[in-house]
Image (cartoon, rainbow, N blue to C red; front, side, top):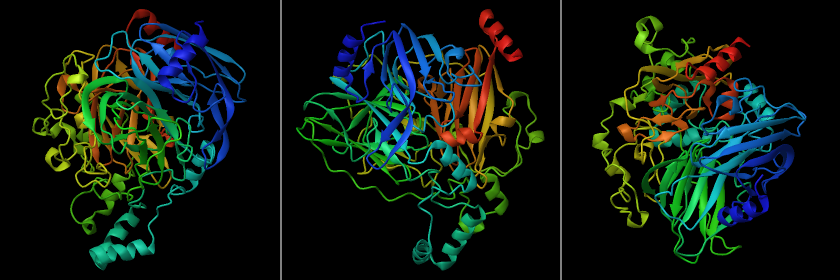
Length: 608
């Protein structure tokens, strides 16, 4: 084992992330009952090495790591290494990659580090992750990165709730709107009647009522306290800087259910990595981070003053707050929460005109009330008409039909970058939203489409371009359609109308390139996470499409991603909203073929 004292001191100087940083090589992690203090409430949760969040694990690309995890709980546990490319037996998903870690026992993970960037780790057992079992991973690259910074911080977000994960799930199953504290009232109706007229307001209210939905159904879970590195807004996590320094912020969204819109008033942010992979830098004023995503940004605070890191939930029900400051104890103004957005018929996939003209059958289709559909299918070999694919579907926005060239996606190809010579103007910074056109990753008319607080630039998936492709660009060998479905009344979530317990695995062949088509027919946004292999988001950039491990799919849209099937074994593929995954929006993926030894191991595992 390496010298922990030296490594800890060095890493703490660099990271200063609040949690204790440790060295790469060999690790000891315990899973424990811990106390969680958000400043709003205290509760007992689950943590690593006696704390929540757990330690910042710092690896180096090219080395092998050995991690011994000891379970001090009275129940089974696990650790999943989110976003890491590793042998499937080391992926840490009970029931798929291994049985889990029984109470009182130790499991040893061993795997090579074949990538660099910002990732995280968490329990994949029950609701231990929402209860606090998460930590950060920073992997240093073999080669120097093409941009410079003077210091860096992990900024790990979470949505701590006074209720345990098990209690939250029970409540959601009994009453899906149990945690919706933004339900519309008589006064809202009277306000709508004044704005739209009584008839239109009544028709709109009837339409939502027919769907057993409300325009405020954006966050399943409210009443939480956002945390930054384990600290609530009043506790104000602070990272120090000297004016003029470049500060790298490694944002990780470890929330169970909450998307955050991030801004630092007074500072521009240059996005340099998405989900651990380098992207061509883009300067923004604000960005949305889906559950389980990571974004690395560089900021340059030049003044001797404090800056607020403001993380506003997508539903505008809560905010996380941290501070960048030259000295401890400094603080800056905390912005007020913006007005809460409202879902529209576009988010329900029904932007067909006036609400009053809505067809009741279509409403139920959009809610996933259709009969179950076939499991993941190879469309190159199927009779679509026989499969009922001609049934009414929402007006999902198909990215493949967009004119990406017209959207300015033909950006210059990346070259080795000297960020001291960055031309921010060439990166489109300062371009107003109307000039950029509509965001192709939100349905036209969506109530969820984000806008920067002060009229600046909001990062879109369409802005992301890989700095260097990981794979040769080639056509996909087949397409698999995954319709994201659910039934809000029963709080069941599914894929193609089938929940995980009743679903057959998705089978892929080693060596093929598969194109996944996500059709979101629900009213919720889903962050889809494929384990073990990269997800190449098709945003129209061709060979420069960004490489990710989470693809966020907004309501009423169709989004494509491609995967080079290069990892044999059994993998998880699921929505990363904890309660959606548990309720059934989850699949096992089996990659068949590959190197003989691994294929034989997989065959034996399948035989049981």
